[in-house]
View 1 (cartoon, helix red, strand yellow):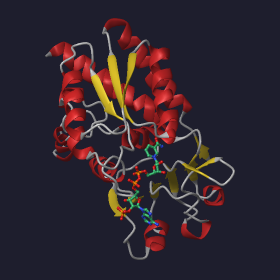
View 2 (cartoon, helix red, strand yellow):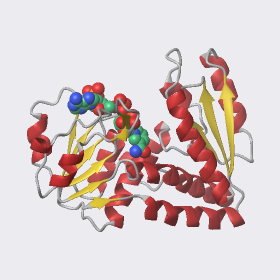
View 3 (tube, rainbow, N blue to C red):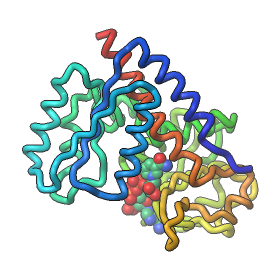
Length: 275
Ligand code: NDP
């Protein structure tokens, strides 16, 4: 069975739009340079904002901006009371340090949930905003009533925005996690023995049918483009046909991620009202 993200996205969208009617919400997306691959994502954020009544502003900074000036810019946006959420679009030009810039964002406005403060809360299992893509993975499993508790979960990819926080979140849901990466030995065995496989490595069609078991649930997070410019996941279509349940690409986790970003904005805006 192939599973999709549209219904989940629509549900979150309704909730965000309902909240936006009562609480003014504003987000700034900081875009440095003009990386083509990130433009579609930024356009998607703008569209979701238009559809929900949330003000989204794109702050375009020049590709050559110094780290010091980028920090000053972020600090200025931090002070704007009309802005509830700030997001730093990646990839950044190589001379800029993403960890430094993300942590220059006021953590009350960290809409991506990747400031050290919010990642610390995630590890200590406190309430807070959580990274959008891992949230989207959990939402998808819950929406389709796929239990995580007691299951053997294999996550391939350990990035700071995706695989690593997802491992923490899946563990909080009482799954038993194996976090794989490019140096994992016997990756195929790890994947084949999993009840739930989350593929987040960024390699088109990498997970082939011989690697997956027929009982498995596969969540394909990968967004890649093949030689014809077609969007494909990290998991080969034949592997998805073999598995018990698998998520679509396109139309799966990617559809939910932007919605989860706005769900984080909703939480931050409501917290802001309470402070
Ligand atoms: P990164 O490049 O930051 O991380 C990739 C991870 O995969 C690394 O941990 C790397 O290991 C691991 N990896 C790479 N090659 C292999 C391999 N052959 N075997 C095992 N592990 C491997 O990518 P991101 O986390 O940013 O993104 C991953 C994918 O998810 C991409 O396709 C991206 O487009 C997609 N994505 C999708 C989103 C959505 O909404 N659906 C949102 C964000 C990203 P190591 O640490 O050892 O280098």
